[in-house]
Amino acid sequence: MDKAVSTDKLTKRFGDFVATNEITFDVAQGEIFGFLGANGAGKTTAIRMLCGLLKPTSGSATIAGFDVYRQTEQIKQVIGYMSQRFSLYEDLTVRENIRFYGGIYGLPKTELRRKADEIIQTLELGTVADKLVASLPLGWKQRLAFSVALVHDPRIVFLDEPTGGVDPITRRQFWDMIYEAANRGTTIFVTTHYMDEAEYCNRVSIMVDGRIKALDTPAAMKQAFGVDSMDGVFQILARGTSTK
Ligand SMILES: Nc1ncnc2c1ncn2[C@@H]1O[C@H](COP(=O)(O)OP(=O)(O)OP(=O)(O)O)[C@@H](O)[C@H]1O
Image 1 (cartoon, protein in one colour):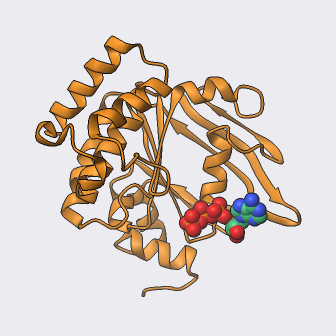
Image 2 (cartoon, rainbow, N blue to C red):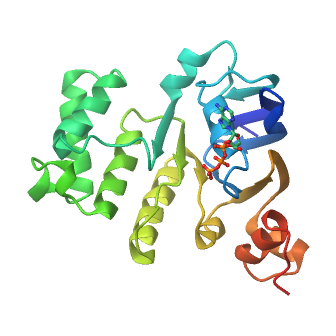
Image 3 (cartoon, rainbow, N blue to C red):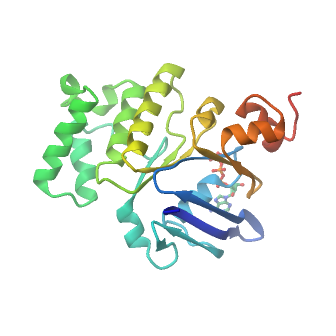
């Protein structure tokens, strides 16, 4: 398997508290991997380590073959990142945001112009290209933020609750973009609190109190727990309650 992410007993302690506790898993190139867990389970801590932003306490991990302890600069070149908290500049226009992030990722000027035109055309944002991002509906902002996270053609993109606060149809449109990126070979590493979205992933892991409690395809997990939805699996594992 061509591995986009590989971890072995990856651990992060904050003093005596173990936020991420010996997590071990692989993600294949081009896979859509759902990284689930209740609030405080340790997902963001794990993602920060995988992006090279937080040094692990122990264990190992590689991203596209690069080591999270020693090769953080190379990791930043091959990943994209999008979250609810860190995203577009509201006081820049659509086009300015694309060019700003493309510039940060080191794209040359001609490529920046080409990418900006391409994204604006694909997302059908022609009429608002020179409007401030603040004026766009949230769903449009999310689709634009996703395109911006992919502007430098990363091998893997980390999406931390990318679709919070929008309706199911808008979320479905966002997932169409995720599938298109995965079909082009980009690995998708996504956290979500929406269990219908967990069903869209190739495989899903569920974290509880810093540990990975289950990792499999949604179909295999539902069968193993004898429930008919990922929500049912999540209730049993993360909340310790059975829906049956
Ligand atoms: N810098 C830090 N110092 C001390 N504790 C921390 C630090 N960062 C995170 N934690 C703790 O680690 C635990 C895991 O946090 P983390 O943000 O990784 O969870 P999460 O699964 O991403 O949750 P959420 O879904 O709410 O974002 C939490 O109890 C949090 O308070």
